Each structure stands twice: as C-alpha cells, then as structure tokens.
Amino acid sequence: MPSFDTLPLKKPLKEALKRLEYTKMTPIQASSLPIILENKDCIAQAATGSGKTLSFGLGVLERINPKSFGVQSLILCPTRELAEQVAKVIRSLASEIGNIKVLTLCGGVPMRGQLHSLKHGAHIVVGTPGRVLKLLQMDAFDPAQIQTVVLDEADQMIDMGFIEDITSIFGFTPTDRQTLLFSATFPDSIQVITSELMRNPIQLTSNTPISKPKIEEIAYLCNKKLPAIAQILHLHAISNTIIFCNTKIDANALCEDLNQLGIHALTLHGDMEQFDRNEAIIQFRNLSAPILVATDVAGRGIDIEDLDAIINYEVPIQNERYTHRIGRTGRAGKNGIAITLVNSYQYDRFMELNRSITPQELPETDDFSALETLMRTICIDAGKKEKLRPGDIVGALIHECGLSKEEIGKIDQFDHLSYVAVPRAKAENIYQKFVKRPIKGKTFRKWLLN
Ligand code: ADP
Ligand code: MG
Image (cartoon, helix red, strand yellow):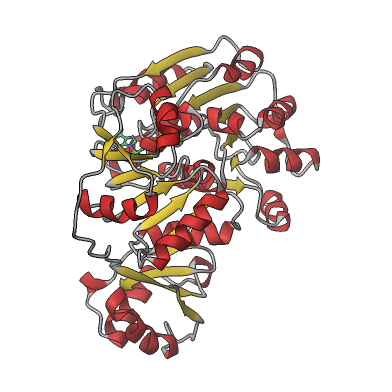
C-alpha cells in the first residue's frame, strides 16, 4: 500500500501522521483519500477496522480554515461513543494545525453546555443526528459555512431510524457541500441518501484489505448457554471479550447471571445513561471487567483493540449484525475468534447466515477455574479542567500508596473526572490510603468502583 506521503496533504497533517506513526495507508484510505481530497462526493464501504475514520478525518481537516470561526464540517455518527471516538481521532490529527475546535453534540447530554460551547464557535461538529437536528432547528449554530458532511456508519444510522433526521439535517446545509458516506455494509435503504442527497458520488469498496485480520468463526450447539460461557472462556483461553445479546433485557439478565457465577461482567446498551456507558467502557478497557455484555447498538463502532474474541449469546436477527459483531475482534491486523452459541431452535436461523461453518458440539472440559479480573478502577472527582494530570495520579499512587509504576493500569480522563486502574488484589488497601491523601495539595473525592 502507498504511504501517506503520496497525498497532497498540508504539512501539519503530514506531521501529525508521522507523530501518530501512521505510515502506510490501508486499502480504503488509499482508494478514497485521493477522491476525497479533490472535494468529490464519495461512498466508501469497508469492513469495520479498515481505517475509515482517518479517510474522512484527513479529508475534513485538509479543507478547514482555522482562521474562520464557523462550523465548516459536520460529521454524523450513530452513537455517542462513536462520536466521542471520532472527535478524539480528529483532534489528534489536528494537533499540529493548532486552534481547531472540534465539538461533540450528542443526545443524552444536557443541551445547556452544548449551547454554551456553540457560542464560542467550532470548526467541526461531530454528533448524533437527533441532537444535531434539534440544535439546527433551534438556530444554535449557523450551517451556512458547512463544506463537508460526513455520514459515518451510515448503515447503522439507518438501522436506528435516523433517516428522516439525516434528510432534514441535509436541508440545512449548503447544496454545494461535499458529502462523504462511510459504511461497513451497504443495505438497499442507503440508496435514499446516495441517490437523493449526494452529487455524482464515486463508490468504493474494499473487500479484501491486504492486512485483513483473520477471524476464526466457531458455532457451538448448546441448549444450556450460561454454563457454556464458562466452558468456552476456559476452552479458548479468553480473558477479555464482548458477549452480544439481541435485547437489553437479555443483556441485563445475562450480566447478572454471570456475576452470580463469579464472572465479572458489565452491561452496555442504549438505555443506559451516557455516564454509565462511559464507565462500563472504561472499566472494560482498563481490564477491571473482563466481560462486556452488549446489545448491537451499543457495541457498534467502538474501537476496542486487543479483543481475543467476541461471543454471540444469541444468533443475531439480521445478517448484517453478525458481520458487525464479528468485526469487533481481529481489529487492526490482529487475529480473533468469533463464537456463536446456537440452540436447537436457532439452528436454522444460524444456517441462514450463510457462513462457511456448521454448529458443532461443545467439547467437554472439567476445568472451570474462574476468569480472573486483573484490575479495579478508582474514580477521582477531578479531571483535565482541574489540571489534574496523569502524572499527578501516578505520583500519588507511587509515593503515597506504595504502588510501583508497572502496577498502575490505564488512566482515563474527562473534564471533571479521572479513572485509574490498580491491581484488583490490592485495590481496597490502596484505596484506603489513597482516599484521604491530597493530590497536588487538594483533597478530591474518590470512589472505588466494583
Ligand atoms: P473503521 O472506522 O473502518 O472501523 P477505524 O477508523 O476505527 O476503522 O480504525 C481501526 C483501527 O486501525 C484504529 O485503531 C486505527 O488507529 C487503525 N488505523 C487506521 N489507519 C491506519 C493506518 N494507515 N495504519 C495503521 N493503523 C491504522
Ligand atoms: Mg468507523
């Protein structure tokens, strides 16, 4: 694959790519970027994990005029998590340009803060369709300068019933805009957008990326699924996995059942408050919970790397969902396994998925050693806005609580909150010492999450 150097990108973007250690383009980047940089409309279909974010991120940033304060680009995503993730990637790509404001506007967060931020101006808005439309209808920002509109994970947005909101949003944007559409699958329903809202779009598919990760698919026939989970975790030496359920109710129930079995699990679904969703993802990523029990909507688009495996607790109702679910594993060039549990009622449904495998009997094991949870999370009631730095947290844990640097896990920070993972076995003890100690002379509140 060609390198990013072959592209006509401005210097700060090339520098950012170098700093982020991206050298060679992925196949979808190599095919879409030359077109995107010519300001043409583009439809790009490529599997999850193929690097679509960088394609539109670079395209959008190349056109941004930092000196002009008005929303110049609008990126629509299906979920808040995905919007936050896209915003993060764009901010890091923009870091060498300086003074580019990227604002996320998503539902489920109070509108007041968003209105306030919009008053200060933003170059790029990343948001979910419902909230973006509401803010446009309230005249909260001026869309007249928008030059690029991006639909990320378009299939999922349509799946979630956002089509009308999206169409209305387009009504607010200038007709000479550039429209970019990204999707992992390409259902017929997308054509409403591509034929009516895009101008001579160039359609690209990247179905065989060179570095395509190998996903080994396995289906097990079992009528008692809960005990099968423990067995499968052991059999495949899985230490970190997402288990997909078809409904929120199933996800909650399975999570409770797993916890009763002593398997530490957290749920992630669309009905949860933003705050709880963030906390679940943070605890999953920092190894404080080895299992995330998720529904399709919540599980989509989140770039969780190093996933050994995903497990389908139920056979998905739609074929596309199966593709998306298994795309969670084997990301960024790593191999993964995707396991589906099939009971006798679901056998025919599984066969309709048209995979090249047939459900097999689950091999017997007699070792049911519990899945170990390595870390536990401490939450601190202060974040970036309080100028609490990761180094301050590390320093306090080393000097006040006797931890060594190597023992300290991932640190995640928000404006007013920080999370740090510490070894689970020592967590209570560390917390007792940590809770009373000031950090940088201030006593912040702290919680030990479960
Ligand atoms: P998609 O949106 O297609 O599902 P993402 O944009 O989330 O995929 O990218 C998936 C992963 O691949 C991310 O971790 C990203 O950092 C990585 N990635 C993207 N482009 C490149 C590249 N050119 N070289 C190496 N890694 C890349
Ligand atoms: Mg993506």
